Image (cartoon, rainbow, N blue to C red):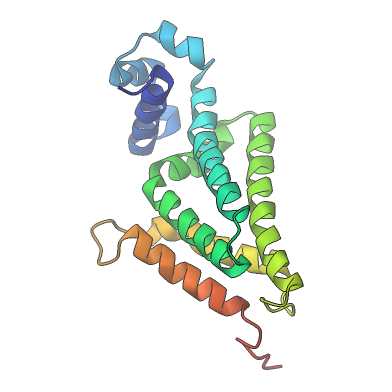
Length: 196
């Protein structure tokens, strides 16, 4: 059985996704989670803390997985490909968490927003370090800044929620592989010639 914090996060995510953060009462969350208000306040000081943790838990999980892939012994292109697939799959599997956060982040205190941004920045910097490793070793093209390639990739990932459907013809893993293939192809030296 899921722990009390996990049940609260799941209940809050479902309710925030369905009704919006500001339309959900704490009582609804605890009722859906099957716990008391006292149990909730033992783990979370407020609805804001729940909202913060909804995205924070997703980001921590993705960062742990990124670190695991990135520190492996495979060639850098394989590690970056695995990471790119993983971020698509975990984003699709956790759409509600990401959607809830981006839709409701303005309800958080500024210090919590800054904390989330810093955590996202750390994730992107670790991802970028793989691109830079490939550039330094001659595996990836160097005529486009690593930062730009990372923004390009995550721009596509962040739009998944607008069009991807689990009922569609492609699984999350298939979409992840296609995205990763396209991304890696764009990094190969000589893959795109300038037209200016």
